[in-house]
Amino acid sequence: MDFSVENLIKAASAAREGAYAPYSGFKVGAAILTTEGHCYTGCNIENASYGLSCCAERVALFKAVSNGERDFEAVAVTSGTDGYCAPCGACRQVLAEFNPAMKVYMVNKQGEYRLLTVAELLPVAFALKKYSQ
Ligand code: THU
Image (tube, rainbow, N blue to C red):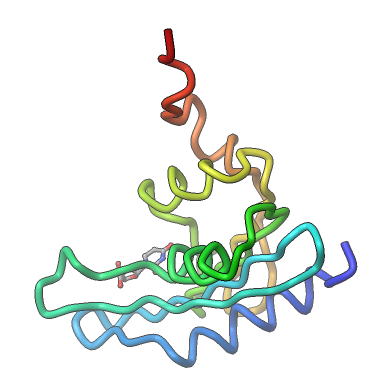
């Protein structure tokens, strides 16, 4: 990829600064890379009605999709913690919609990462086309 993994991780870390997480105090940043080399970032945005909160990964993906992007090759996610930040189940399903083979870099506060694909994180994802007659 043109955009290096290091740059994707830096973009995710920078995006984390924008997190609005007054309820959990857990700030997350994400950066998603298109196959053409465009990068879109997101942070988690919480709400007083907790269930309306949105994860960093979905904010980044929705920004990209709303800009006309459809093809993604990688996403980096960081919570600036000792542990590697793994996407929640809802985000895995939303990422799988666009590319189950997408690489997911789960990053810790040292900038080290674990790498798995969306399909590895969410085997047997729901896809409507599997049920068409
Ligand atoms: N969160 C994310 O933004 N991404 C993840 O991968 C895990 C969880 C957010 C949701 C909520 O705002 C906070 O982290 C605590 O769950």
